[in-house]
Length: 302
Image (cartoon, rainbow, N blue to C red):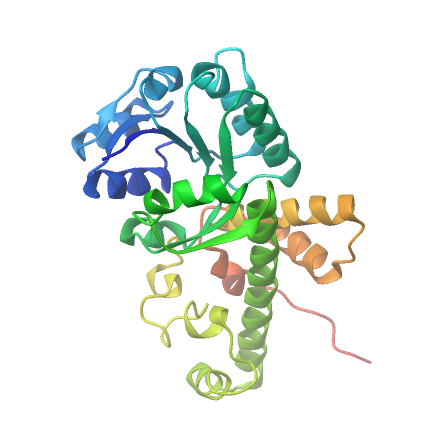
């Protein structure tokens, strides 16, 4: 049993913390939303009145926050996690998806205070968080990764040490750029099939076993029918919201700009998901790109 502080009990953090409780750990949770803290307590966890209170006596601190600015505030502030844990043999794990620069800056500050830290963003969405089947992409020192692995295993199925500080975030944004681009390609193919009179089921049957096969098609098909568990069969109720895909694509473009990497398809995907979000689909699953694309037209070639 490990004493764990869990900060950020949102759609992802709450089920992750619950899985830690089920694994036998003592988990003291905090969130700015009092209802989220109450739900964590109802699931067998312990409630904390603040992030600093959550950290009291903890051997491991885990955070799941919306953006880099929140991570900086949590860890680097005068009353933040690093200040609270200074002098303790604690391991800090940030599971948020944020920019590489922030991940490295916070890790550097933790090291200066004598604390080990990992950036450990996840893939798998809310369903994976609930089922304990998340993929963790972890950046940081090997010794810290070895220490974290048993705890991460209570929340995830695949745990990859991607490299040094920031490597977890790099892996996450590269992976999600692939996902965003491939989902748009699959959506466009189904839109074209509809306009050409090709049955969706036939396109799926062909592409699922041909060179067009990909995860966005066979595991997360953006049209209703072929993949029963896909959000397309639930009016695009989000497993991974379009707003989050836009966030990750923007992070990828920020990183590409800083690194001088040419990512024209990633840039176009970010532009299209901005339009999808602006069209009122930010809260829908990112596969709702199909619904948006279905409403678009282009002029016929001369």
